[in-house]
Image (cartoon, rainbow, N blue to C red; front, side, top):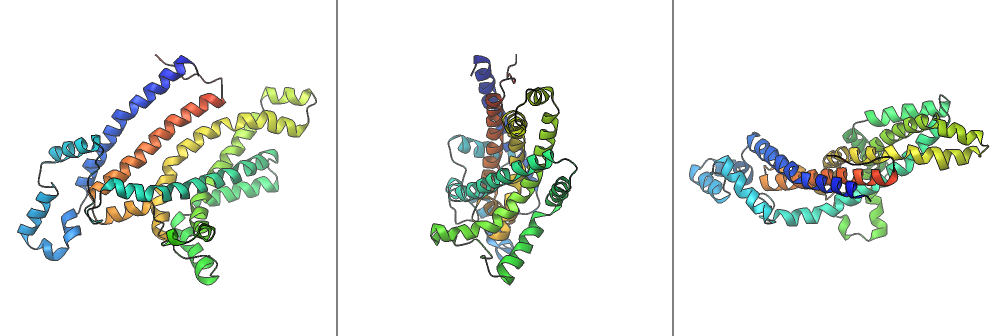
Length: 323
């Protein structure tokens, strides 16, 4: 790696600081501007009828302070590694909640992304090598259907069909932590299918387009003219160049994958960050909402930096330089 590339990556990493600061300010303002009172959600309507109880609760949680003071107090604690304590989850530190839930989300989304690439890349290659054939048309139609299907509808359909009517799989994923690993795999099937399907459709369409663009370039024609076997030209020359843009596509797909986790984890009761975020939003748990948002935003930003780094490794023509 050249010194110019190193300098570029260092600048990208340092740029994460103002980006995270801006994200925190935006989310803090939006959360407090949203309708609803966390104290009412926590104590219930009966306690809300007593102004003294409400004032004391707001004072305990620091909600009586002016909004800028609340933000800077919270930001100062975050800099020290303290994301606060949950309002609705038994006053548990937010960092502990995130630590308990993060691995479940990483497992689910990691398996879904791996399977999506494992399926989409060969399907995209097959579709490109048989352009305008029935196979290509079937892949195109299937990709459009996969992109158009709402993930919540597909999740409910699979629950009714595979779990309720056929009884093959558990309806919900709650309690899987107490099950031995070989049996835990059945809890992954439906959530992974719902999480992976849109990515399979998106990656397959992009892989097809990338392959069609590469196979028409001059270096592929030269390889054919030299008498190389067609399969060697396809996989040694064309595929290596067509896979390079997939690095960027996978990185750009991460925000959509994380946003879909909220719906999928809630429907299947998957004990991850998405389910935690949903519960925090419905209960107006400001510290947990901010903690999940910061973690998700940081993951997306770091993935963007890693994508740039991997891109320059797989494609020597790219030079990440700048003034």
